[in-house]
Image (cartoon, rainbow, N blue to C red):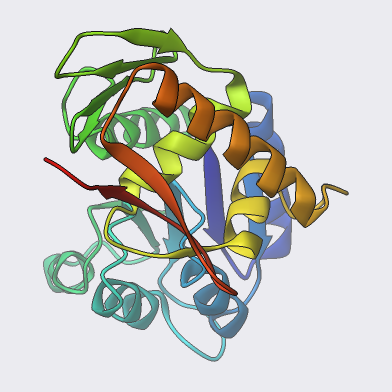
Length: 227
């Protein structure tokens, strides 16, 4: 799971990054609102942690602009203020939850776990699109029409998760590469092509009508041609 952390207090940010990585999260950190907004709009994150008081663009504004782009990624807002109006403002801007500084790490991790469960649409880890079901926990892809199933590799699973979470949108090769392999990875774009081929073969194996459509010069999107 990839998290975007936007926090301008560098010592605090570095401490949070270290803790989150120990918890097996992948984390990218930004130290101002402008770079945070750019990262947030990439659409590659599973969760976002936004401080309210940021240089250039505040956390409320980042959340508003993210939601205007129809990005549904859960947002946890960090605020040094405990007044009710500030909490309401955060939720009204599009945040899903808020945490007042100072906070206990255990509480932060609990909030993140709750938001991550919510991000799987309360379906017990099963995502649906067209005629397919994706069981995230068992990495199993099933055709709902004929009940045929196939196991996915780790990268294939992440690709299907990302496509289903962004159904109706075209994802660029760059977005997919960064989402699946990460900013610091040396993965080339042809890795995307290779794993898209593998994933398409798995869809064909279960005889699903749902296909991964290549959009020339742009990227890929998930389509169901019969359901």
